[in-house]
Amino acid sequence: MAHDKVLFEILIRLADDHLVLGHRLSEWCGHAPMLEEDLSMPNMALDLIGQARSLYAYAGEIENRGRDEDAIAYLRTEPEYKNLLLVEKPNEDFAHTMLRQFYFAVFMEEFWKEAISSSDNTLAGIAGKAMKEIAYHIRHCGEWIIRLGDGTEESSRRMRAAVEVLHPYTDEMFDHDDVVAAAVSAEIIPDPLLLRPRWEQGVQTVFKAAKITMPNDYWALRGGRAGQHGEEMGFLLADLQYMQRTYPGMTW
Amino acid sequence: MYSQGLIGADGKTAEDEAFIARFQKRIDAEEKIEPNDPMPEGYRKTLVRQIGQHAHSEIVGMLPEGNWITRAPTLRRKAALLAKVQDEGGHGLYLYSAAETLGVSREQMTEELLSGKAKYSSIFNYPTPTWADIGMIGWLVDGAAIMNQIPLCRCSYGPYSRAMIRVCKEESFHQRQGYEIVMTLAQGTPEQRRMAQESLDRWWWPSLMMFGPHDGDSVNSDQSMKWKIKRFTNDELRQKFVDATVPQAERIGLKMPDPDLKWNEEKQGYDFGPINWDEFWKVVKGGGPMNRERIAARRKAWEDGAWVREAALAHAEKRKMARLAAE
Image (cartoon, rainbow over all chains, first blue to last red; front, side, top):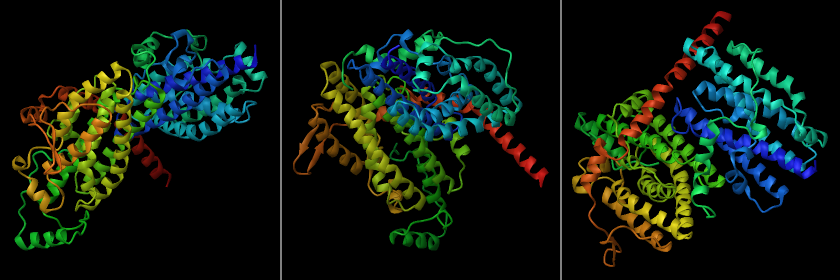
């Protein structure tokens, strides 16, 4: 596979993860359980949207077909979005939201740590900036998982329910396919398989403090990386794309 | 985002004359009143009510704008809107803290908002059906807020005046950002220009209502002016706003929906048509297009989040016990 095609595909996957997760988090804005969370969830969403913008803009350059960040972010069909299924899962409740964010952030921290020395300088630069932001996401969400897991009976029940629902979506983060294999061998990205033990350890540390058991018996769910999404994705895209689809070709 | 000409304050106070005179002397000398200073009960109550209404307005104001975050037309606009709505939440937080210095807790104020006892700005009871509304809120609503709040930076109560200094900086950024959204639409396709004009037609009059009733009908205005909580009357601020905003509309080819609007050379300001006060009072009292939805959304967030807040308390308690046991 040609180098630029691999790089483009990797950038799109990463950008879609960040955009879609940022979108989900931003749905909380004005509806959070407390005012402090009405500030911190948009704050994390802003980090994610900012990273998505850098990644889309760079993908557009690599593709070299005149598409800018918005053309790529807004004007594709559902199977062309390559985000992990994990990040498109609905907010459900605060426990699901914090856990989804935590799973992703722990993975991305390990990913960016390695991507700082990517053979691609632009990606390495994006990694450097993202690293600084993600530490807060891990700390913030990790603390909530502990508070909820070891809080009241209800919060502990909800936290365990979230783990049961979301954990099966985490395997997809470590998946290999032709694109990942080519990107790893070109040293564009770290090998996700090598990140897995570090991710497990990071999650385990917080789960232990939260008195939550890490599931080991479950059916892994995957498909987003191949453009096969869940039922919720179409609604998300309907919101996201509404203006661009209704008023095509205008400047905003 | 902004505070309305105060609704229904009770400035009555029962201290003796010597006390009131000493207090008034400090006010007249432009001294700042700080939380632990002696103050008339009426002064404290008026401030609690005003800061509370202001804080609630910031929080409820997150809803009509938050409504558009997931549908913002570009990533740049999405990021800017997220940051703006987050700023409004931040303003709510400082304002609740300022009110707490007067002895009312955030929980108490929240309960008053959810029960309908406390008011918030009537403007947020209007809907945001189009993207242009996001521009209008920034340009007109934040613009009106700035007119109200710049004088509040000199308010006699220290914590409120200091909160306002920070808030005003952010609001003026929001106002420019909103105007830029509207300008982009006004310079866009005919469809976009129509969208902008239609939105202006809906927001103009409610924005003028934000300054509150006419001076003659604003019963508590005099006392607030005397205590230097307020520095200008509702009508003075409204006039300043009209004079600043009309030329901005003209510059981008939009028209205010007021056939009586015209420049008055003699007063060096615009004359404008009568405000529909029936509509204002209807919206203030709960009958506006979005009153029920706004409070229902806040109540839902509060009730749905109860288990989270309880868990945080329970966990903190467990930690405290574990620490004590270890000592």
